Amino acid sequence: MRFDLTGGVVCLGETMVVLVPAEPGPVRAARTWTRAVGGAESNVAIHLARLGLRSRWVGAVGDDAFGGAVLDFVRGAGVDVSGVRVDPSRPTGLYVKEADAAGSPVRYYRRGSAASALGPDALDRVALDDVRLLHVSGITAALSDSCLDLLREALFRPRRHLVSFDLNWRPALWPGRDPSVLLELADAADVVLAGADEAEAVWGTGDPAKLRALLPRPASLVVKQGERGATLVEGDEFTYQQALRVDVVEPVGAGDGFAAGYLAAHLAGLAPARRLRAGHLQAAASLLTSEDVGEPLPPEVTGPLLDADPPTWAAAHLRRLG
Image (cartoon, rainbow, N blue to C red):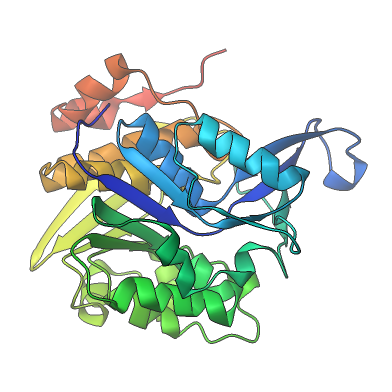
């Protein structure tokens, strides 16, 4: 599944180093760890690059070994990192997680990170003239007052490009901060993506029709309904697409894969149901691995499924090989 599109996509937000136990059992007993890299916005940028789009990640890392690892990884995935600031005094963020198909517990070490010092001037470091889409998420709004100012600038300044906003609700980030701002930010976007469960937690409902009433301005509203499927609302039109059956290794990062698949198909002008299918297919790549961004599914899988009739799609079952 690849898309040949003109113009680029910029993804703006924090990326951190991830530590995952390299052996089974409780985290406190682990003696060896696997180092990975993860961040919602850079995950989307990597997925988009693998889908054939010209993607850039804009953020900040510390002038440390972890920061270098982040830049090497994201750059190595084909993403432009020239707009990333290397902060000489603040560290790169870190998080630790357990890989579990039922949900992966995560502990963040990001307070005072380089990314938390981002502000509206971050937009000045990247040319937006040839950009078709700027992608942001609610995570950034929680990191600091300056990060919230950055999102407001990105969403409310005059623009010729689209802006997509992924709710990405992380309750651990919000003590002492007011999450009601997320509704204001989302309603200023052109494309909004939100999980039904997280929308229920933040906005009191995960129902697509009620969310449309809360968010009247975005042209496209995508409500992800977990393993059941996803619903796209555009105007008064509702399109539902069942999810694929996948043998889940662990779910972290699947939402970013879905966002990238959907956004690439959106920019390509695909019909609503095919946009949602593209999201489900890219999410499956993350569900089949313990890392946040999995290897792309082979074209001999994605091509036929993207255009499959409903019974064939419903019967598909993706399994990890090896």
